[in-house]
Image (tube, rainbow, N blue to C red; front, side, top):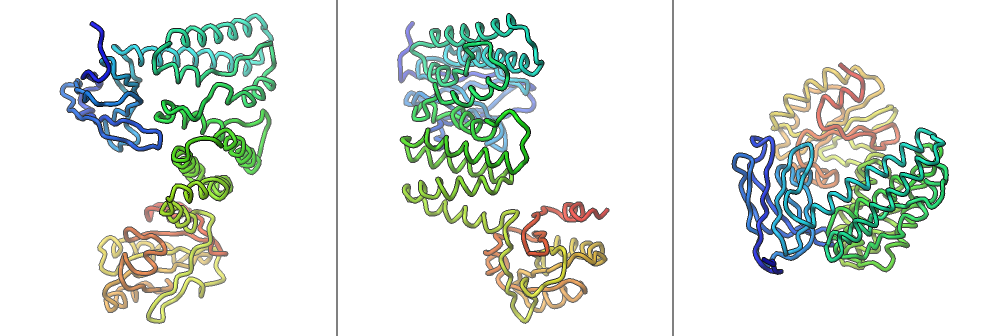
Amino acid sequence: MVQTLNAQHNLTGTFSPAKNYKWVLVYHQKPNGQLNFVAEGGISNGKTEISLPKEAPKGTYRVVYGLPEDKNYFEILYSGEENISFSFSPQGLTFIQSEENKIISGYFSEIYTLENKLINFYRSRSTDVSQLDAIIRSLKEVQATYEKKSDGLMAKHFIKANHPYIPTTNENAVTYIINSKDHYFDHLDSNNKVLQGSNFLNDKLFNYVFTSLPPKRLSAVEVEKVMQENVTVLMKHLSNGDESFKLYFLYALWKKASDNKMNSLADIIYNEHLKSVAVSQDKTSLIKVIDKYNTLRVGATAPDIVGEENSKNLSDLSESDYYLLVFWNSQCPHCLEQLPILHEKLTTLSQLKVLAIGLESDLESWKKESAQFNGFSHSVSMGELISKVSITYEIKQTPTYYILDAEKKILAKPLTTEEVFEFFKIK
């Protein structure tokens, strides 16, 4: 029987080990990064069966099976024309029913195996031309076979876009790396809406920025410089693309650079590309979020702390190699437990000055408790987590720590006292 679009279809899965999985959420992924909830279901004895709504659109779907949701998921293709059955375990995902997903998973398995063979051939510095010819021939055959096999399917968008650079001659490793970069976008249509609704496109674009490097030794600064150049090339590739996708992608790219502490690269992405797109899309709130992040990131100069009640300001402190900012509250049990430990272990460090900033609602309580910590410089800001200082430093809980250098630049943002002690090599 021929199944038609808008018929209701089922998503059936087996999860192993069964005890580790209790529920499933299914989302439709849109090109701007938005996730639209579609369905949910329980997992009983490792098995689930979910009826997808008749109106569920075709596209890429995210199947979430645990928390946090952005880490515990896999993607599937849904054409609106077939049921999907799979088995999943930490070792991988296997499709039992679904032409779309069986073809695309088979393709990626075969093409990646051959690409790894080619890379290993170059790494081994082999001179066996016949072996290289065989790998090249297999790459061409697999690519052509799957493009033909996927005619009329959503999978073809991904198979064509993933077409790897395949040498036409017996070129050496250096030439292969250079040509792979030069031909990276030959088959990749970044304006393709099907691709934009999947992590596939983001991963391809990320890989160009972060892994398309020259075949020679580079310093960390040189690596970041090449990545900046890669961003310039990439943005030419995206120049005529959809602005909402560009905003979504550039924010993800900026975040990845920021998470990797590549501040120069992150600044290029933000100042030269992301900011203007955010303005054009009327997303000024995103600009505020990034600007705030940049004022408190590692490497930034810490904002001054102006205390109340004649307390010490950050700008008043000098002649120390390091500063530790401790944001605390005199009625916070965890703070009252941790500050005596900090006081005991840190006041012996001559190169360190501690500024304890009380985020308070009761000034007398602060005066009483802060008096116990001689050797600390003290500051107070009334209003607890909505005080001026709390807002400036985005304090969400107490205690919170910042470590600064002699110039008041942020070196680290420890999450615990243990991380503070580890930074200063204190046991």
